[in-house]
Length: 180
Image 1 (spheres, one colour):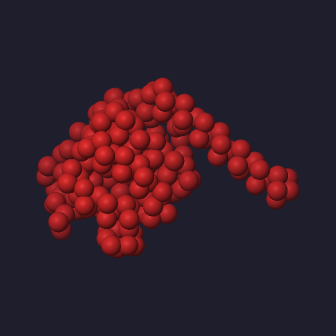
Image 2 (cartoon, rainbow, N blue to C red):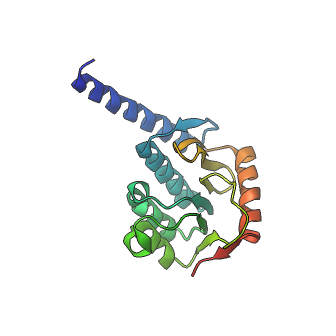
Image 3 (cartoon, rainbow, N blue to C red):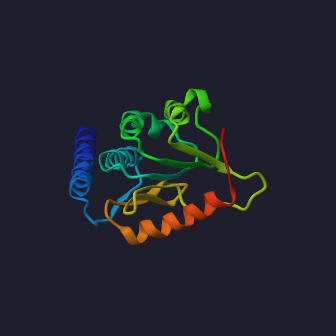
């Protein structure tokens, strides 16, 4: 396979991935979507934020650093959530990529009165929850491997969303502190 053929194959793969995500998003399908590419993560998170805005459903999120490579692409979708007055609970585990002022997503989030931001409590227990975003009570993306960013997503899995929500709510109700 030549370099140009390989590039075309990669583009077709991304188009197919987007088609699958779009169909699952539009129809709220209970279909697992596997992903590990940064571009796939950004696209899935964008669709989840769009679902939150459209359905006016709350968001629960755990991120390592709000990596700018991903989250810079999500500011328009975040703005739609803000316009729809969506409640957001966000845990950032390892500081903010680019610093709090250099990260556009975080700056918008910090200025939004319906967003509560949390950080791990100093000296608290290690957080064992995956990096994740849950919308309402059924749409989600969670990482199964933090190093490789391998993740699973589903637009209609109340059972798995319920488990993640339960653990998330325990976390913010106990061993986390509200950020200023």
